[in-house]
Amino acid sequence: MPEPYIVFENVVVSHDENVILGGLSFSVDAGEFVCILGPSGCGKSTTLRLMSGLLQPQSGTILIDGRSPDAAYADFAFVFQSPRLVAWRNAIRNVTLSTELRNGSGDRSMNEKKALELLTLVGLAQDGHKRANELSGGERQRVAIARALHVNPRTLLMDEPFSALDVRTREAMRREIVSLWEQQRKTVVFVTHDIDEAIFLADRIIVLSHKPTVVEETIRVGPSRPRDMDHDAEVQALRKRLYQIMRDDPEAANPKANPKANP
Amino acid sequence: MKRAVGRGALASQLPNRALFWQCVFLLGFGLCWILAAKNMPVYIIPGPRAVALDILQFVTTPALRSSALASLFHVCIAVFLAFVLGGVLASIAERFPIFRALIHHRISPFFNAFSGIGWALLAVLWFGVSQLTVVFTVAVVLLPFSLINIREGLASLDRETLEMARSFSQRPLRTARLVLVPLLLPFLIAALRISFGVGWKVALTAELLAGDRGLGYVMNIAMQEQDTTRVIAISLIIVVFVRVVDKYGFERIQRKLSTAFRSA
Image: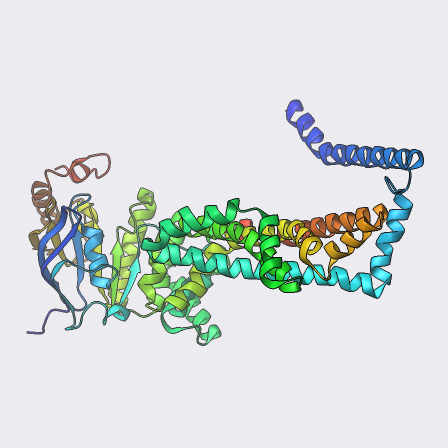
C-alpha cells in the first residue's frame, strides 16, 4: 500500500493563548479529491496554509511526500477565497504571474500560450486580454484557477474558492472543477463549510471540530460522479449524517445559506 | 428628462466657463501688474515685458542656463537620495518591528520639524559653501516626505495579494519586483511628486545661503544688486517649470496608475 502523500500528525497551532488546531492528524493520498469541512473559524484555512508552508505549526509533523512543506512548496498552488488578481495585468498575464513568481520570467510567448490554453480550459478563451476589473466575479475566480494550474502543481489547495459567487455561478464552477480534476487527476484539498459542496466534490470528507480543532470524522463519499444531489438516497443519507455531525454550526444549519443541509 | 439634459448641458459648459474666468483673472492680474509697474520704481515692481525679456536670457545666456541646470541637478539628486533613504528607513521599520517606533516616532518627527534653514546653516559649517551643502540640505528636508509616503504605502499594501505572491514564490526579490513594487507605485509616485515640488523651494533657499551656483545663488546676487526683475524672473521660471512637470508628468502618471490599479 503506497504511503500517503500529505501527512498531518498531531499538529498544534496557537495564536497567543488561543489554541486553533489542537493536535490535528489526517492524511491525503496522491490524486485524491479531499474536502475539509468544518464550522467557521475552526482553522480550515490555517490547515491549507500549513500544508503550503505559508504558516509554521507550534508542534507536530507535516510531511508532503516525505518532505517538509518548505521543501515541497513547489508541489502546491493555492486558489484563495477571493481571486487576488493583480489589477495592472490582463487575464493572460495574471495567469502567467504564478510561473513568473515561481520560475522567473522564462519564455514569455510559451508562458502566454500555455495561459491561453488554460483560460480556454476554464471557459475564458475570449477574455484573455481583458483586465481584471473587466471580468465578473466568477470569471476572476476562473482566472485564479488557471493561474494555479499554470505552475503545473501536483496539488491544488482551494480555500472556499466559490463562497463569494452567486448560486448559479457556484454550481457551474463546481461542475467545472470536477471536470478539471477528472482530466488532470491532481490531488485537490478543498476547504468548505458547505455540506452539499463537499458531497458533490469530494472522494473523501474530513470533518473538523470546533476549536481547539481535531478531526471529528473522516467519511468516504460513495456515489459515483456526477452525483445526483436531489434524488440519490446515498447522497441524502450522507447529507443527513454530516448535518448531524455539524449540528452546532449555524452556517451549515442555516437553510437560506445551504437549503439542502437541513434534512 | 428635460432636467437631466439641462444638467448635462450645464456640465459640458462648466470647463469653458472655468477657462473664461481663469482668463479674466489672468488678464486682471496682468493689468494690475502693468499699472503698478507704471506707478512704482523698477527696483520695486518691474513691468511684465522686462521680466519676460529677463526670462528669455535664461535660454540664451550660457551662464544663466547652466545655473538653471545646476539647480535642476541639485533638486534631482536630492529627491533621489531622499527617496532611497526614505524607502530604506520605511522598509526597515516594516520588516523589523523593533525599529518601528524609533523610525516613525523619533527619526521621522525630528526631520519633519527641523528647520530647513537650520539644516542649511549646519551644512555650511560642516561642508562649506558647495554643491554638497545644497544637495544635503534639500535631501534632508525631503526625507520625511518620502519616508511618510512610503510608510503609508507599505501600511496599506494588499496583504492578500502579497500572500498570493508568497504562495507561488520563496524568492523575496522576485516577489518584490513582480508584485510589491507595482502595488507600491502610486505611493512612490506621490512621494516623488511632493518631493519635487518642495525640493525646488528648499533648493533656492539652500543655494541662496550656501550655494556657489544655481538659481538661488543667482537670486542672491540679484538681491544684492537690487535687480528685482531677475528675482521675479527666477521665481516665475520655477513656478512654470514645476507646474509643467507636475501637470504633464506626475499628474498624468498618477492618473494612469489610478486607472490601472482600480480594485480587481
